[in-house]
Image (cartoon, rainbow, N blue to C red; front, side, top):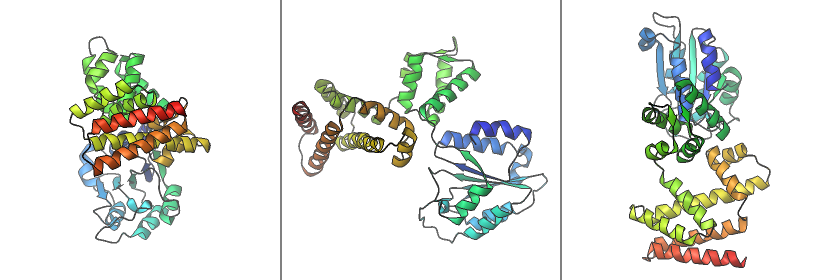
Length: 343
């Protein structure tokens, strides 16, 4: 079930005994949380809502709370947050988690309690008994990062409900500046609404003024310049980053990460992985994979490998010598370009 489906069924009084909110899109997880909170009248919330963080609280406390009857109300709402024991992670906590108590509860939940398990993970360990029972008994709310087309549809709906329009170029610019991350988009939207309140039309200029670009996005342009052999543009942008007091090692690390993603995406694509499967395997946002797939149409894997190895060389020299970072980058560009031309 998606969050918007949850929003449509809850007003009808259709409340399940157990929900599993699984995924890493913070905005959607928070939206699902708010929808479920609204099922308890505000005047009853202090007495009938429990919040338990599994990294600091024993599971048994949450289960005992879920088994309690409501106080001066019809229903209790109990949240179990960060249930690391559902994953393959071995988290060190100063107490032992009573997993069996949760399994028993899931098999026979209290009629007057709604138990909500907030799992901010890409996936759970399906081999564990508790995970199998949970998947069988709970209503699953999927809050994993949306594909680009889903983000577009979601944003279109938000704009329509607010009575705003957005220029297509502004729309694309917003996606690029936020990496199509819904949480970031929804954080920027109120500022854009305020700026465009007179004519209700959000322009590209307004997006560029209000939504700043991250270092990673700027370095993404640098990758483009390198691959297209635009030496002067690449050198100018690198110089500008240094003037902005960005650390050479940090710039190089992000460059390496971008080329690593391109290479990993190329390998998985050859193995017939689709965009969603690649994003899941590499644990990156689907939009980043979408951009990588577009780039791979125009550049050879051999060129990507040479660039990657060249950047590894820069990293080694930055760590072991006092050579000028700009000079190292310039030498890398010259060597890479010559190799590409002779390939």
